[in-house]
Amino acid sequence: MNLQDLRRELDTRAEESAARQPDLLPGIHNKIRRTKQRRTATALASVAAIAALAVAVVPGVLNTSTPDPAEIPMDYTRDGQTIPGMVNGDKLLKAWIGDQNQNKVSFAWTPTTNKIAVYASCDSAGYAVPKEVRVWIGTWYLGSMACRDGSTETEAAPLGIFRPDSALWLSAPPGKAATVRAEVVGTDSARPESSERVRIGIYSTTGGSRVGAPAPGPGDFQQDGVVYRKNVGGDTLLGAGVAPAGATEVRFKFTPTGAPLALHPFCTAGQGPGTALPPYEVEITLGGKPATTITCFSSSVDAGASNVSSGDSQAPAGQEIEAVARLVPVNKLTTELPSDAHLALGIYAQGPRRDVGGVRLAERIEVDGITYQLGPITSAPGPEKRVEIRTPADQKFVLAYGGARLGTKDSLQVRAQVGDSVASGKRVDAAGGDGDLGVGSEAYPAGPAQVAHMELTQGEPTGGTLVLAIYLPV
Image 1 (cartoon, rainbow, N blue to C red):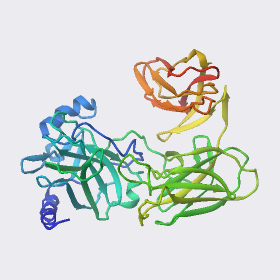
Image 2: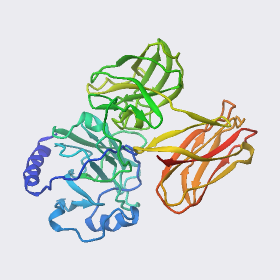
Image 3: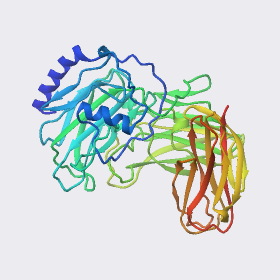
Image 4: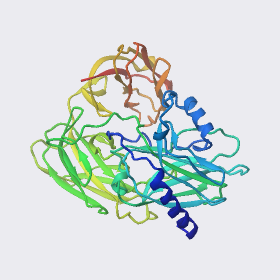
């Protein structure tokens, strides 16, 4: 932070003490749907533009009734630039507008809530090179937003929403001073670039998609803020361990039951910008034998439900074995491990599965903190390339879709859809020859009954099975 920024920071703090409203909204668990969004527009502009576009871009989010003026934080304005006091119902906590042509900004901020939405924008009108602004809180990389180049429209969308279960709060807990920094770079080159103006707005929020995971209870494992719940869907925790901050290994012993194992690593050393692979991976061994290696990434401290899982590992029943998770660099150019990086591992015994033509469907799953039970299932031969199922009326549900043993070496592309709403358009590499799609899922709110279908939009199966299934709340 330079002297000019420091001077403005002290002035801003004095203003905030009189203007800022306390955040009194009740906390609920939520995960990040994503931490990095590449946008074709800026997130902050004039109050009028954001208010109008919030309704167009996020219909139903903005309350159109007239709020009590005493509840609306003041706008932050500098040099003719404005960060509004409220966006999409989110209330401004902290704002910062950089100097003209300043490509880096930094300022101090002490979080007062663990429910925030971060908005960021930068102007680059007249420049031919695509640019973006990247934002950090402490050592935690939040994501990026594309700079406005004069040809794009303003969009009232946050760079990211961070709920109470976000792993961000392990590095920047509420009540502890943190440094917020932003940098403008070339989108393709990742090299520092100039920008006409950088704006950052941090808001308290009730947004986010997750309903909230249950609070830790009896039998749950909790250490240093990381939680592995005893039961997640139909899976049961067998053992877990959390390494001290900055450590590169965690180990513990557990006793398998004979059921297939689901491995849930928790790792925050992979946070960083760009499209390159994260600098670290998690290498897991069971009983001294390699089990899997998984990319280092974690968004939620509800580690048994929200983080990457590797399933179907096997171990003899009744024989205690040691599980070890190690943090390993992807290549020699990997930077030094952050001192506040966290590493953990949880191992679950998978619950009952139902096999439908090689597609293994769990009898129970958990989505956004809600447990669902497997209900109706339909299937069709792979060569038909399409399968349909009727969705329930006036009840929330999860649509599961998959395929197995399709017998093609070509790449496959599958699309699952409920009415006019597309659940997935993922591309699957089936070069191994089995043509297994795995199982994907998407949660839907209650509504009228509709026809859901899955179809292969690319690839020619020679056999196998396509499957659609409905999960209903327990």
